[in-house]
Length: 260
Image 1 (cartoon, rainbow, N blue to C red):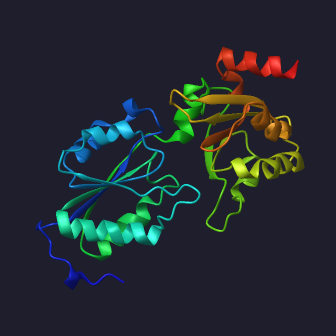
Image 2: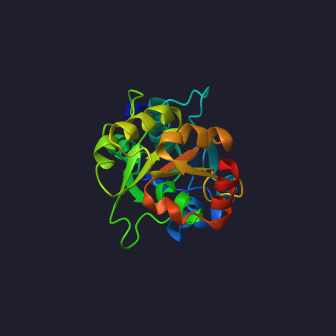
């Protein structure tokens, strides 16, 4: 538990800004996010941000990596503590998170924690990979006559399970986007089959919007094969729905050559 008596602030109002870094392409950062980085005294940044974004920070800014990739030990409790500690020591802390911090990014948890200790807080939205990764592959989330809405679902809840919302989403005509679901491909295929949606078009986009982006397309019942044939792994976005048919020509050619 943090004891505020142990902190001696250098600033009259220690503060936290939770900033969305976007989906990977550093050019997709917002102007407001750049302003936050330029004014930061400390930046706590995640694994999936473009490192070029740190160039916007001042020379005096302390940049601290707090990624959570497998094998890394940066727990959420430790990050929360560091936010408050650094804000009271130096002033303005920016928490730089991939995509949008309010879409499965635990941004609100960090803001609520900081508020308990008197920090001023702000949120700067980021472009989410849930829409941008597919868009860079030519796939829209909605388009007239094909899809009227879209769902964004977590593939890994806090207990490690796949969200039950997937079953609900697949009973609609909506586009379905699954984040953090690459370890659940067999389960996703099974659910699609149980709901008689095994022929639903699917795309898997790895490293979306970056120069390393890779795309695999197919149908739901073969989703694991799509990943294997295209050597796709995390970080990746899974898209299910008729809009996948709009995937770029190059990706369709790759699909049909694999099917031959």
